[in-house]
Amino acid sequence: MTNKQLVEKFYEAFTRKDAETMNSCYAEDIVFSDPVFGFLRGDEVRAMWKMLCSNAKDFTLTFGEITAIDHEYITCKWVATYTFSQTGRKVMNRAKAFMRIADGQIIEHSDGFKLSKWIEQAFGFAGKLLGWTYLMKRKVHRRARKNLAAYMNQQ
Image 1 (cartoon, rainbow, N blue to C red):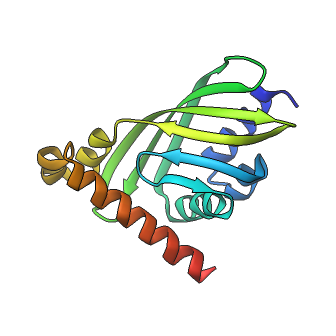
Image 2 (cartoon, one colour; image 1 turned 45 degrees about the vertical axis):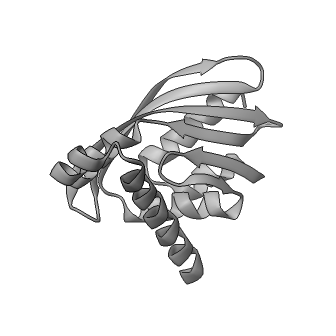
């Protein structure tokens, strides 16, 4: 399987909310980061995808522009639309993934997107007013990590 095919497999599974297949694309010691969860490793990453896929409401995902930078690094743009469970508000998250692949598995994955834009959509007026602040971003990060820890404890 080529690197591009691996990334396609990952995002095709994401469109189906198939965390098991997504996680099968990862190396055992996967390293992940994004603006909401921050830095995660291994089982934390796998649990995050399971949690997000199982909780996703009104979820759709599109992806494209898969670009190989070299023999290890690849990027992909994706857009997820869903209802944010905490507020019931519709969110459209436009992101760019950066992945490093070795031996047919993703070993590093980071998603980049504008957290203040996500907060504005997820929290409405309060998010628009405070979404750019460090305090609001930190609050979102802490809550995401707390939810992930609780999910992992239940499993």
